[in-house]
Image (cartoon, rainbow, N blue to C red; front, top):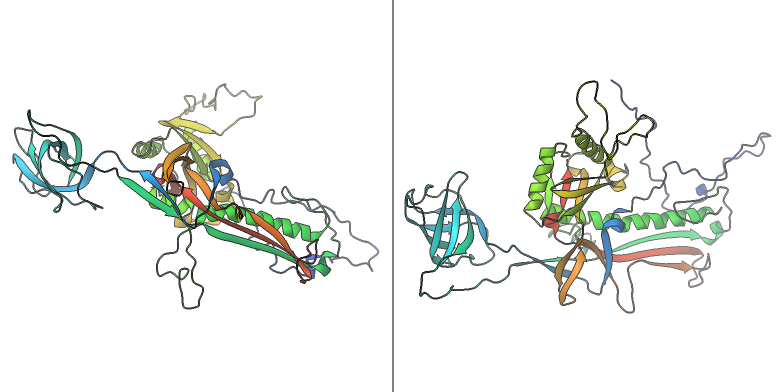
Length: 469
């Protein structure tokens, strides 16, 4: 069976040393040999751009916050529906007492005079509410149908309110309803890193010219290490906001006998969507009917018109293959030819086999996410730990910001970093020591410090979809 050999493999060994030593210098030269080796002075970038940071730059904004706790309020549902009810009456009864067994956070939102629909998977009735007992979470109904109740006693019922009816000359609706809101919160975490090199090692000139990703070009090896520390820190700023989880009560992070206590964690994107959003499990949706299930789920949420899907490579191929099979010319026979797109692909044209977007109820734009492909990050995972993609709604959401004390429009994903008029902790970097231009310490070294304090806010997580194995 043909296939790709895993040769050469990719190295999962750490590429950096924890402490800069003399072994960082190239010393593999034997000057007693009359044949000196030819050396390339420039480092070859065999892994291309190694940074995986890109996702949050595309989909999020960054806003300051001066508090250690970020809270916001999201709208609740407008209409009342209960999905675990039961009747105390038998079939054909004209009246019944309905008990609401749903998990409640307050009294049931049912009032006398309202009209309701009660249904099982196959049977249904419409009725008017004649009495309500909020303490017992029950309400009495009188059925409109002449044959009375169609379902049996204690069957599981779904109930929703569709209106009301009052007789002539009667008083108005008794009682009122308060707006249902959901309050969410998140806490920023402090992210740090450091690079250090002693003054003596800085006096040695390296042999290899370095030109790291977007960084300075030069012949000093410690410039490379410092720049890679900065790149690594930039990546961690993003992956922390994606992967962070709150410390659970009783966990080792929040308190343990060794004294390493007090870490609280934070809610990253994956955690928030897994807890409050939509989860597609069991592999990638590869059929149109499966995408219809995704669309049906989005219909029941915010119905956001435009959505971006950030995905790993195989998921992207699966979508391309699904869309290609919908082509009218993709049939079995001599006429089987790829001709999807605005124009037919001729033999002289480069054949494009991928799609950047498609519409099925909503607009879906897909983009490869390097983080999910990188074998040293999420790309090296399998099974239940594997994430294949994330659907992110486009646009903004209006929420009540409890710090500002007013409604504000915010992107569905945005970062809040700690800042005030005297301290900005969005991205801090400073140099200490007595080498490399620093003159603020008697330490014979240069230390470059990095710090940020931030939290990810995932608004309207019910409109996101995370695709997992």
